[in-house]
Amino acid sequence: MPRTRPGAVTRRRRKRILRAARGYRGTRSKLFKSAKQTVIKAGQYAYRDRRVRKREFRALWIIRITGACTTRGVSYSRFIGGLKKAGVFLNRKMLSEVAIADPVAFDKLVELARAHGTAAA
Image 1 (spheres, rainbow, N blue to C red):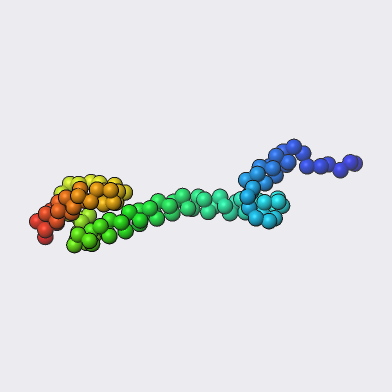
Image 2 (cartoon, rainbow, N blue to C red; image 1 turned 90 degrees about the horizontal axis):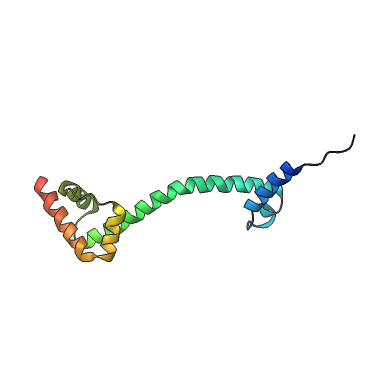
């Protein structure tokens, strides 16, 4: 009985993995077994880090807002609490952009938060 060789399906599967592993160092881009492991692990990292990116950006926005608030003599938590009581529902991304791009408008937001924060306390 003649020997059977891997057919077109196997070749396509292997080429797909090796194509995904292009740019990796050494055998990780050349040999199928290590390339497959690397591509699978890269997919796991990519899946995880798509979620981590959202956390990191929110943390960055909060750091920016905190810095802008402390220069104006109000804490971050009192600022956010005051804005909520005032009915200002800007998300943290927009608040950080306002703090960077338009300091005058951010000053007004801080005053608004102060006015509503102290009234209830």
